Image (tube, rainbow, N blue to C red):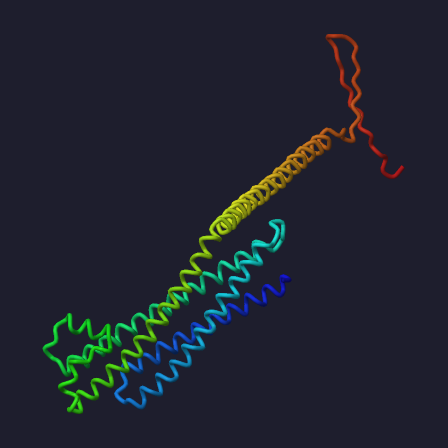
Length: 287
């Protein structure tokens, strides 16, 4: 698969995982309405929508599981020198982890719903058998075929309604248990994939750490070079300034030592008599 095809496939998988998350949110919303419903007709409508959505979600879950597995297999066949190997493995790990989180979330929602449905069965059971012990309640909740408690009270409308409700709840619970089992199996399968990929994940993490370390060192080297460059430029300017000042001083001294427009004649006769005659050059004015 080309890099472009790989990216398109992984983006499509991620979009489908997001669609599964939306389905799960809707399933949870429907289950909340079902638990609070007081109308059998309304509850039937909600249950029908929920069942359709759960079937669709189940299909998507198995499709995504197979597509993620396919990516893993393709990655395992790539040579280590492939320039895209790290990208492909990181994308696989990302999708794998995201899918696992969705599975775990869905399983938690269904587990909570099953417990709430069992609570409804217990309430219905206690309507016709207020004196029931906890063992009797637990036994009845776990086995819907145990209905002796209703046999002597089925003549009353309340008992018949309670029996119908309990049977419906048991059907829901069986469906929920089946869903939870499937989700658990999927989760276990995905975990086995993780274990087989552990060395690969460790290699990627090690490579990532090495790259990060090298980048940090490179940034430090660049910063030191920049500071060194700035220091060198500063020293050059200082040197130029000193040279300029020295040259300026030399020029001033030379100018100060230039001979004035005065001729000095020195006549020496003897060590005891030295005469200095100063002759000024006067320019005649008018001649």
